[in-house]
Length: 211
Image (cartoon, rainbow, N blue to C red; front, side, top):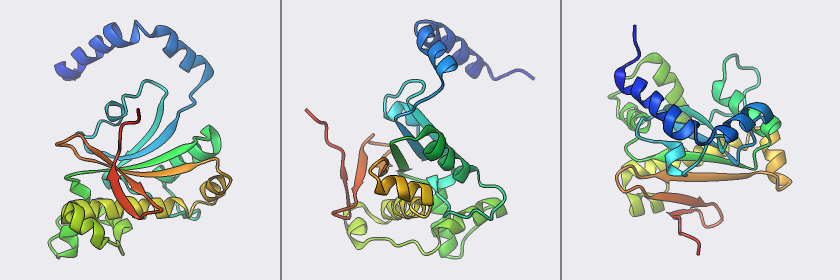
């Protein structure tokens, strides 16, 4: 079976237009390894292109994607924890200075969770079990008033994932020492706007361009 033509053509454009002109950078990454500025925990949604949103190049971001950009709590007795393994690697091996939870608008995972709350769930057992990570979600009245119900649920998911990150002893220790900063962001697909959680003020606000 052949790769779809659109993907094969894209690969050859990558080789010609992006890899070849920057071959030295790629060789450096291959030989010296990665030292990303941040880890980004994002959704699997194909409309959320993390590298494009941050105009990031190769080696800049350590990205893990899953349904609804969720972080499970620290559970060392568990068997298979892909997201937790990535978090551990980012914190202990790569020692990233920033971890970003990136939510987004029109999130199918969060929408499925809302349907489950209404008793209309139709998701598979894998998705259903994964979405139990949102159980006990605390939706802020301020977010409901400012952004509407759909977005408020997505923002609550970002908050919950940040709380779960802090159950990891290594992350809590590094954050306490000032070696790690946790960020909660939400990307609006239609407008392209990113809003950021100010944890001290307990509110999301648009990112502003620094002069």
